Image (cartoon, rainbow, N blue to C red; front, side):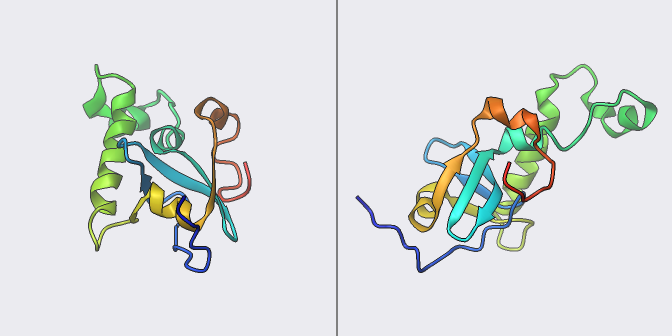
Length: 126
């Protein structure tokens, strides 16, 4: 068993930095307190950024997605975030889940539970 590197914390920015596991899944930190970190699937978290408000502003903003699957908008947004997090000078950073788990006590929010209050008090315990 690998020991936790508690004296070497990582600077993980809530709702911005991405954390990737060995299977290619991405997570985002939604809560951090000292050496505890709460993660949720990044695709799920990103799906709660924009509200579907079928008005003219929404139609203009997402016109290129007409006749596409609803998940394509969020997948494209996450892909954009992954590209920039992978660059040294990009927005956000990419972290390896195994390395994060060496430094933090990590808990995960079950995907089906995240819908309850996903954006309320960004950074407060959900």
